[in-house]
Length: 615
Image 1 (cartoon, rainbow, N blue to C red):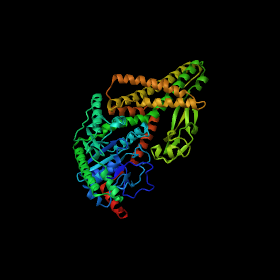
Image 2: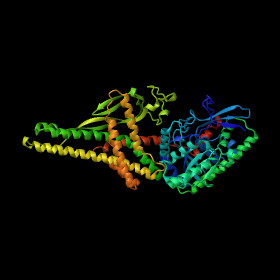
Image 3: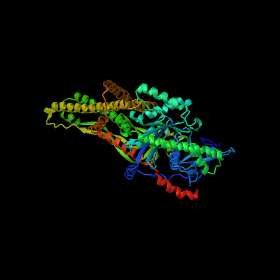
Image 4: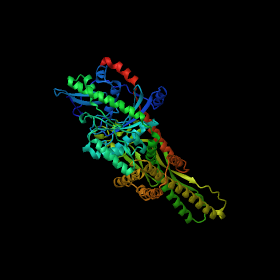
């Protein structure tokens, strides 16, 4: 029988074999709503999840063909196979000749690096059957060789992709049937996925096993790993996950690959064709059984899943402005304390007191960039300016203007091994920015109306009182920010699965580590920010968080939304937090629109007919 294996870089053909790739039309999320109003069919929204390399994109291609053609005989007598997602593989024929089959080329698929998730962004595909409109959400795989940070970015892409849907009918986990030797990676991948899903989502879990012909269309050893894991989860979290014949589906992707190879003029004997024909029939039945089962489930409201993710996104989006604002508050508190000491040391001299009517404070000036940019943060590409104790980075090296690629490695600025073509630094030293900020010094006037020298003492007293009032206002905002972040963390802990790490504290610790490196490597680098982070933010935040967790107040989503709005409404610093936050939100929206694709039955048919004569 012909052997099919994963391709390696050395096996890659110089030119892809011509094949038919379904015409994918980019649209905004409006198309989701439009289609729902034009049909009385039941819509099924299905999220596809799995470890890198399990074959999610290939399964979706097979899914499209199994739905369209009931038998292999129908598929090979059609004009062309249906391929909605580009894919590639190698196949050896009976003469041991290697055939490289590559179907299409798209920026969302990467075939260069083994272990790297082939799907670069989450994409949504619409398939029509007689009974259902099926929305399949293809996702980047977990356990990406690029590391935990890439896995976290992939998870955010997944959660953004489901945001247009009010409900999910099934959350489909894909596995290979025998994974006993990958236990550590297996458990890590599952935990990463579950950490970002609401507990009730597990009621809609389905388990699809691919490549099961070798295990007689049974789940194989992986099923035992799943059972053990979910038993542990039940003991630890009191969560029961159904795992039975109803929600376990075993099929094979090889019949689809056979179809692609057949149309690429690879020869097969009658025995092989019969084997793949039986595989096609079984897999098509499993696909239909899967859809019928998904239609019977009570849909999972994405509000519950997205409430967790949105709060996590809030934290991630608010960390930078909040840390910056907290630093400014501490600087201003120090300036105000110094101002009081200076006033107290003065004699009751009216002219001298008039000069102290103006108090210097610092604030942020934000400049929104029309288009995102990639800048280098390496010390050789950045200079620093000391503004009232703040070492402000000036990113002098812009390596790519107008960059709309969210993943740095996918940006055209980086060549082999992630080296920047412009400055020569690693992609890890770069970041994507959406705005520029600058610390500005402002003079705040204390409104006191002096009369004459005899009232100088009273004026001095008033100036001190007004300065203390400003200190109280800054302290109030600082404490509210700390409490807000602690409550966000508590909300995640109460509602998330395996959500044990404090994201805010982790981010502050990363900033502290970065400041330590800058102090060591940058000449004359001031250490005020380092001590503000360690002496104030970390210590204050931990104290507030521990007290809050001891009280264990049950927080609702409405509570979290209210806290966020109060953050934005703070009279001194709220507008700056809101301004930066809104920039992040707008960028997220733009990125999300670019990641939505439409592929319906009519589009595929039209493209197939258009290209059939050239095949």
